[in-house]
Each structure stands twice: as structure tokens, then as C-alpha cells.
Amino acid sequence: MSLRRIPYIQLLILALAVPLPALAASVIEGQQIYNQYCIGCHGVGGNSAIPNAPNFSRGERLMQPDMMLLMSVKTGKTVMPSFNGILRDQQILDVIAYLRTLQR
Image (cartoon, rainbow, N blue to C red):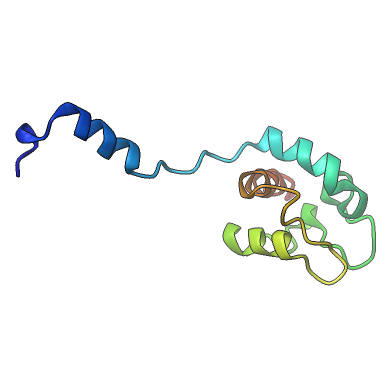
């Protein structure tokens, strides 16, 4: 069936059914979320505030892909609590985008 034969309403329905790409991560939102939830352990500017917390200003753990980091934040790791149900995936990706700006 050619596209000419598909009524416009069906094209609209089809267009709405196709998933949209994820929104781009926001460094500004990420910084705000980091300051609210992460700074107590990971420190100002990513300089770890407690033992064994990664030092993000040195890029520790940031060589991992975003999806791996997202899963670590969602599930928790060693002393880090799970943020599943506290932060949405997009918010975690925003924090990851912010963390990537801290590397010196």
C-alpha cells in the first residue's frame, strides 16, 4: 500500500506510535540533582567526601558507558544506596552528564 492511500489520520496515529528519542541530558539539571542527593558522599566538584567514594574530578568510574553508570545508581553499589524509585532514568542521566564535566 502506498503512502498516498493512507488517510492523514492514520499517518498521524502511526507517527504518534513511533517512540521519540530520549531527551538530551541536562548538565544544569544534573548539577542540581547532584547537589541534592550526591554531594554528601561524592563531595563538591566530585572530590569524594567519604572513603571509597569515587573521585569524579579525577574521572574515576567515568570510563564506563552511561547505561552501566545508570544501572549502578539505580541498584546501588557497596555503601551507595539504590536510587531506583527516587530518581527517574532521565534525572540519573542528567547527573551523569554533570559528572562528565567535572573531570580535570
